[in-house]
Length: 251
Image 1 (cartoon, rainbow, N blue to C red):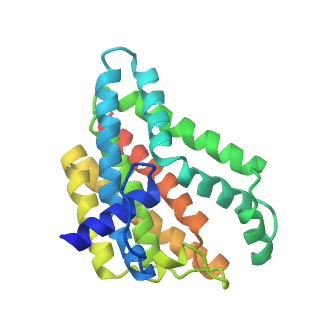
Image 2: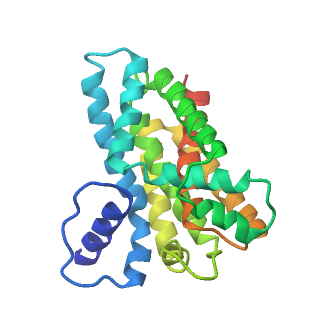
């Protein structure tokens, strides 16, 4: 139980701004890496907070405004952590350069490029469109899509190695994701997906898992592995993909 609480708190502190308490001793890299098993469970906590906000918002606002508020609350709870990865990865992939070191340099640049900005706008527009369609008919989906997006991270790290030779924070996750981490993440995604959206949730999980597998294969052939930015990219795009599947099956 103590190990679970420590790892869950680590996951909570790593991918959200929610308070997770202080840690009395140095956390080993292996423990931090294995905490990713609980990323989808943290996603469920985020989703439940979004659902609570939606329930209040439905009393006051029309669907479009509620959808916008859900996205705003999601951004505030996560600090836009994975959106940065989406923008940086898009800037790198669409820079027109083939040299891996040049692409990585662009991805590490703190400035937002035009391609990254377009990707952010289109992704948020897509999420808004789906949410505004479904939030009143199927409100539980707001508890599902954060879980599936964070499952995509675990699926990706399980099937990938870290690409940058100098190492990085993302290496902690690719080097410490085994069958336990994937199994726990998959179980969380399956239970939440089916409970929140039935068959549509199960199909969305399968599609997101396959998508993460394709991203891993592409990253391996293009860069030799993944980076932290690519993990953020797959989370955000995985959320959008899950929402697309849900709206296609539930509308």
